[in-house]
Length: 167
Image (cartoon, rainbow, N blue to C red; front, side, top):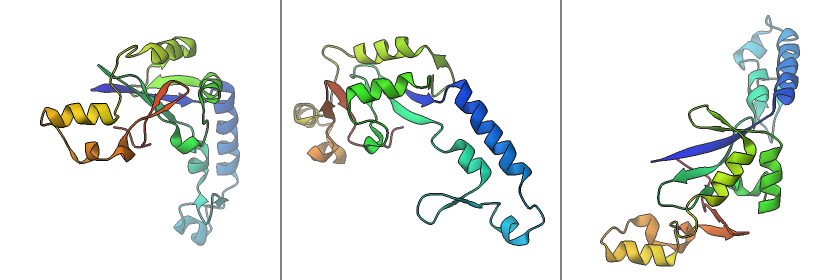
């Protein structure tokens, strides 16, 4: 069992988002059956996606940073390099917002960074060939341990998950 952490916007950005939401909703043509049938999705998104005002308000509001688990090094989620691709960019991104855990508790950004960088150091577990070999020797092998494509990456000394799907 572990704890997931997320970056959320600072209050001024939330106020801006809220005002934009209120403005958009106040301008909706609630009598338009076509718009109503699309759940008021009238904002162009990526590709052919259409967003509702609420979709726009909540888009990328909650970015998964990573997970802490006992016995393991902190596991960072680089989100396919969408927001950051190295340690310097990651720390700048974290500092540009607030940090909350999966239970909704807000954490001091600098204390979170310190905790995450120190978690599991120096000998916390990392999924790699050595770990997979040790687990197979114990009879604990599973499908994901049979392929190096699931191994953690090490980026600027950080343990980074090969997946963006955390639980």
